[in-house]
Length: 172
Figure 1 (cartoon, one colour):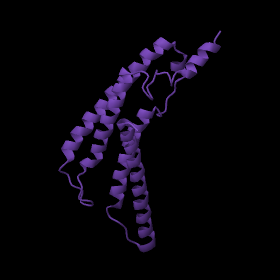
Figure 2 (tube, rainbow, N blue to C red; figure 1 turned 90 degrees about the vertical axis):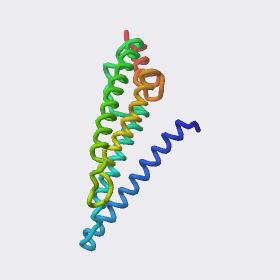
Figure 3 (cartoon, one colour; figure 1 turned 180 degrees about the vertical axis):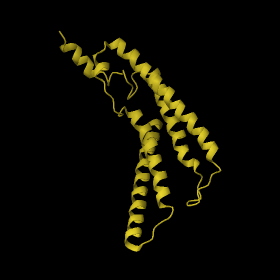
Figure 4 (tube, helix red, strand yellow; figure 1 turned 180 degrees about the horizontal axis):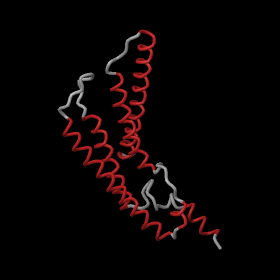
């Protein structure tokens, strides 16, 4: 297994672990609340923090795998050369959006690092730090997709355009 594959496999394991911990935390909190009229005061905030990290890491993983929702009817009908150009432009747009996420979340992380939650004692900046990590991962993925059109999940690469090639063969 290459280092890059091991890195992304680690992200998958982190997501799975966060999901498990979040589910256990929510379940325990529900049982305590309805069964014993008490609860974990920090449980809601910790489960929310876990959910934010799950979503942001999951979005990065989905971008890398090319699993985000896409309507490609028009894209698939373009000639192969134009598909490659449009695919690279799409990756550049994703790169710009990812960099905006990265910079904006970095600024919010710095601005909120000293704001400490009274329930957990953790900095509220941890919510924004998820956007920093995700923005960085998506920026690297988008840069690779723009430079290497055949990269896994890259729009306009050979594995995403095979439907269009078949459509070209059946056109009169």
